[in-house]
Length: 458
Figure 1 (cartoon, rainbow, N blue to C red):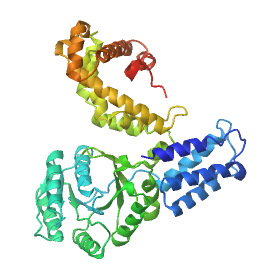
Figure 2: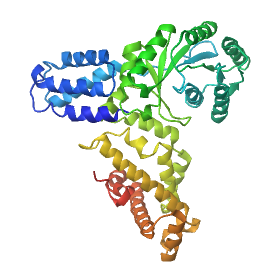
Figure 3: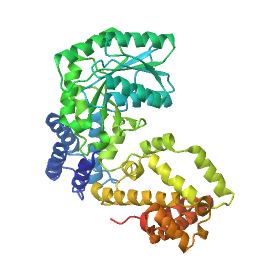
Figure 4: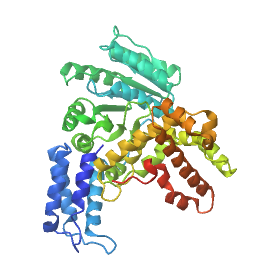
């Protein structure tokens, strides 16, 4: 997300340099570029106008402190206004009500409502330690009911059955009664979507809302629809007392206009971002972190949280103990590291949250990413084609063994040799980690982790 906007803004903000003071004249061109970058990102025009005006008011006449260049001062102002535009801080779900807390999900067909219900159920169960019941009041699509049942089983929450002969209001009320009997904390109600906003759909969802009085009414919208996302959100906001927005398909949205427009247009906070198809691909929305990401500063806090959620601590502790005992870092350990990285969304998921490197733009990083991802898959295939003995002791891999492994993994003999060389470099790096000054030595030895045995060249 935001790839295009980040590239444009990063280039633009480099132009405001070498000035003792930010004046209207020396930031005029930069502001024009910022305006164009936002419009190209499909941010709504009223939002762009107000944003640029606010940045200009704050920037003009601002004295630059001794420790900052004008460029850094201007970036600081742009970042603060981006945060303000998207909401000052993350707003959590308001679930402090007499249980069960009811969450009503609304949105157009195809926005990803049902998938989001499954993701949110998993989020509440795993991160908030809540018991959850899910129910579908979509009586027009039997497939939606079945889909929700499958998702509920996958994430391990209670599914309340419903069918197309029932009325949405009755379904929702029956589900809440069931949740009370079972002392369940949260009820997620999935509702019917339409291909466009229509009076019948709005009347139905208003009736469901009035009958169940939810603690949260979340509007689910596809980020890839850009400005339309903000307009649709406004229409729903006029019909329902929305409490927040969930932006879905954010991973496929290179522009990011919806994220920058929705809060301003609706006055409602974005509470979550849907980052992919998997049931764990839901992130709380943090305006400050997203502002950093837009300006190419990365989002290390979200990366740490993601690592805590996805990394296998047991395997990590086992590896640490093994290394401390002086036992080598073998190819099975190497494969584990590759798999852990894949669980975190691969290189793409990591680099999206890391600060930009030097003058590199995101398309250059993307090309390098693609090549590295391909090579990591190849490495995993090679290791899987080895015997357990070869993985534990790569020194026994002779020429004939290399030919067999190459045939089994669909690679060339030289690829096997390259992998063994990279593994040896990583072994040396791991030895340094367990010694004195481990982290500094490890950073110097990081080259071995990248394809070709060195840091990527762009």
